[in-house]
Length: 339
Image (tube, rainbow, N blue to C red; front, side, top):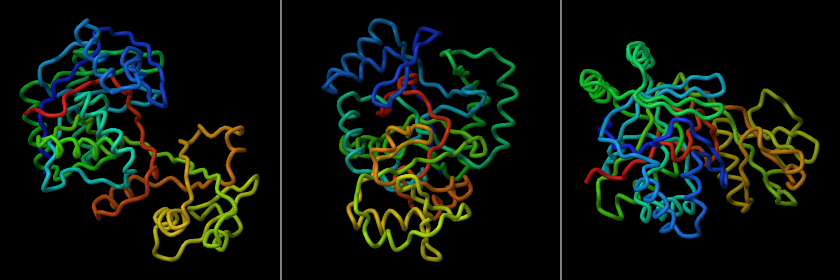
């Protein structure tokens, strides 16, 4: 079972926030500006200065109920720390990670020593959310942050709800990781390297609230290997896997019993050293599209399939899912360990 713990958040003092984006990282402008340095040591100094100047304020360890309203959708669940066990898995995962990204995040954590974005975890008990949220919503949020298109609300959980939450986590059995595979792997690596018991900052919500999208996998490789060309067939929208070559769509046939994405990645892309650039849906413009010889696409995976794969210990390739909500970086900051 996952062992949850109160988390000591560092929160912005100002209620109305301006969000900005840097290298596809989106969050409050003061924090994002700290990421623009060449050295992680300078990033750490910048974050420390935000706390010293009172732009961010340290809170006592608490459990929180978190509600985010974004693009007319509401997501809610609890914010806590999840202790990472070295000898057993308390969070199931469904995607492989890229070693170079894990190393990048590990280097960041080793220097900055703080987490700046919660892992997005899911559980399968939707009734728990329904039972707890109605009572909480009757009270004014303890913290509220507004951005032009978003509202982020936090309620500090009372002692009675704290015990209900602990009881729920004991009975839950396991949490499934929805988003943050590289952050989880790098936090675990940090804990092993520093011989500390890692605590992951987490936003835990019911799986029926999550919305999945897709990444498009684009490549500049040409010509295509025979192992791919031999599997191109007339486009059939009922088939889960396809590729766009110039202005033509082709379906990609896969062997019976093989997961289409796992087969494509491990049997075609990796053996032929086909390099991939990943684009979330809606971000691959017509101008960008012209730079690539082909773009792979796939049908959105249902949440039930993602959880089933996680429980079986089967991993999809990196960037096979694009789960929402996408949380801002730097809105919540937390330590890496309670040691």
